[in-house]
Image (cartoon, rainbow, N blue to C red; front, side):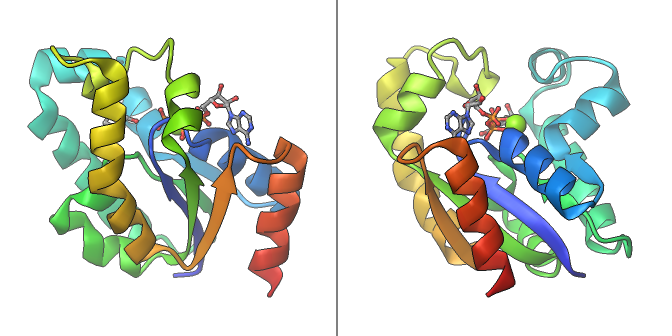
Length: 169
Ligand SMILES: Nc1ncnc2c1ncn2[C@@H]1O[C@H](COP(=O)(O)OP(=O)(O)OP(=O)(O)O)[C@@H](O)[C@H]1O
Ligand SMILES: O=C(O)C1=C[C@@H](O)[C@@H](O)[C@H](O)C1
Ligand SMILES: [Mg+2]
């Protein structure tokens, strides 16, 4: 497929960037978290609380499998944990051009201050948890990236322009 796929840590801007790229390129936009929320008619947090993380992960796999064979070109922001799951990786790799929105721990910590994401809940200090997860996840995002851009260092419009240049190259 030739979708444009956006990956990255929570708070890296996948939803915001994906929505804008889709608008600029005249393509439909799909956000995997939002797709699941719509399908389940409840928030991500509620799905985790009522059915557990494994169930959420299964919904992610169903979504990425379906999207990998969808012949209508789209901009797709995948949920932050999806690339980490081995069962999703063959679908992800067959989807198209993968853009990694890379953020520093400092940028992500700031953006996730008010987040109620279930992945960040627990006994640990939230900042430490973000740092620890980022260390685990960054090499995976790097591995799948065709294009990498750093978020948090330039204004949003300039970041979009950089991505659109890289997509043309
Ligand atoms: N380039 C940017 N510069 C400044 N703020 C940004 C930028 N990109 C996104 N943001 C802001 O960061 C926050 C997180 O963005 P967004 O929700 O798009 O991230 P996400 O990767 O989709 O997160 P999640 O994995 O939790 O869904 C939002 O408040 C958004 O407006
Ligand atoms: O990073 C994660 O593991 C997650 C991020 C959220 O967007 C949701 O997809 C869910 O809370 C899992
Ligand atoms: Mg999002």
